[in-house]
Image (cartoon, rainbow, N blue to C red; front, side, top):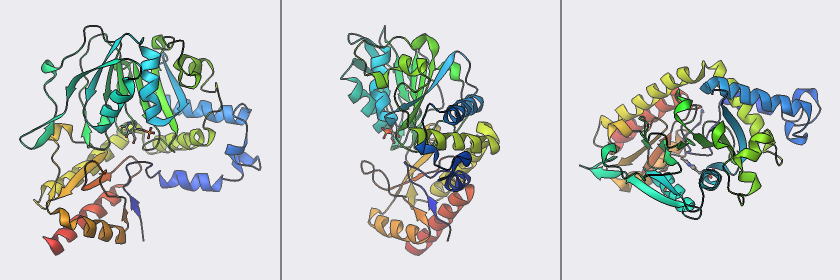
Length: 360
Ligand code: PLP
């Protein structure tokens, strides 16, 4: 009766984390109440917050000259925070558009800055790909370069960093953070909505090089101001305390699993198994060019879309939940974040083979 949840977000959390949270729900650390019922300024909460940051720093090897911020507003909150904190209204900012989320980031940025789209993903010979970097139209004096390392909707992932000289790289890592090792020092700002590999929605984690902390415009809303967040230990206003607690449990779990390198090996194996299943037949289609195939979000179509409803219904009957693709793309999407065990992917591939045998 095992259920595997392939939702793109909010996504499944590791089972040991959920069990621990349940055990501690009404009596955290023997206090006789839940962690969500205590002050964020209390000693036990400060200790929790410090441990969460310490563990995240260890997991991602975050150097001391970077700050870690736990903020409100999810991924989209950062679509506004980035231009407000890093650029003046008169400045240009470069944006690489690889799918739905980077497009949304541009739309939000238009309120605050002049975004310049350097390049957009395109379809060549039926495959989604990116134009060669040599053809990108970068600005001469961009305040920053924004891109999305993994497009959750489209299943497009970038493994090679844009080469943009001294311009600070700003990466939306909402659906890929902690899934693979990173060289933090290549980035100015990394941000992520929490609801895939970190914890509950609403929380966003920001990793920022310290020299970028004090550039916010005077009219930046205080809750979006990186400098204020850093000066106040991410407690300028009441932080999302329960989400922070769960994020801390996820970081502990990830350390116990062997850290980011170990989870990366597992993630690659899961993705390879699923893409092999898709590529083995014409019954299923994934049309992302192989260098850009996401190891976190795997969209696929049935060659005969009239079978979509039957596929989804029977998948659910087999405990395979939330496989419906994003409404803008259609078809299916399997999100296989860190918490998805390899058994879940195997169950999905077995089901896909069986469905094809019956309907192919
Ligand atoms: N960026 C990416 C890559 C996402 O996948 C999402 C949401 O799924 C967002 C941004 C927006 O996050 P939120 O809904 O937390 O604002």
